[in-house]
Image (cartoon, rainbow, N blue to C red; front, side, top):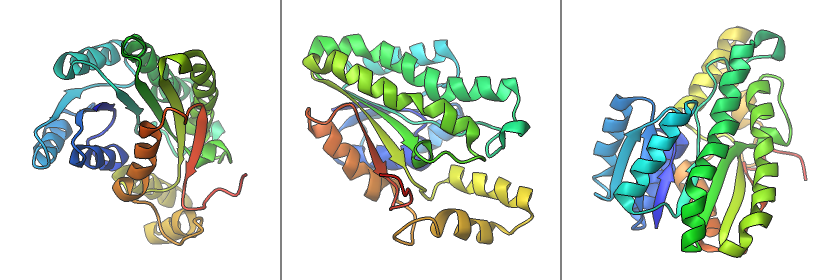
Length: 256
């Protein structure tokens, strides 16, 4: 299959890129950083040559248009879109610490990018009578956290979007689902915890344990390739799974 995975030169996106590349798929990865993109492509091409990359800013509409056009031209189409993203620059932050510009960035990063990328790939998926769209979100959407107000508010509409689109395009064998992720050991997660540690005058290790490890039911954080990849593989392989949100969080969330 042909995958487009955004924000995929490190962390969650990189883990998924490795997972699907090892299974014989073709894929396009993206990043705002050309240096990170080059480094990631060099690494991934040791697994398979069937991977290409394009610099892309998820907060810029033209950049999204260019990314999809590039992906469709180089692979002949997109079968699976996985919308992944980094974090707003201000996060973690309480509401009173945020500005209009922070909210504008967060909404563009999490919601507008998902909407626009979906619009751009949808016609091709409908024409081929096959498509899988997966939005990566967080368990905190179901249990909002004060310090993630930017992300939790901006990402929560993705569940409504997936539900609506699943009903509108099910007849075309195009499915839409949301993954509510827990904590994974990524550079982004560690940067966020480092900021939180500085704000609370605690050590990184102390905050990592209390805010990440101790919150899980299984006493460890997730591995993107081993823990998340198989779940998405199942969703991709089944046309019957659509309009749903899946917790993949090691038992962190207490919600039903």
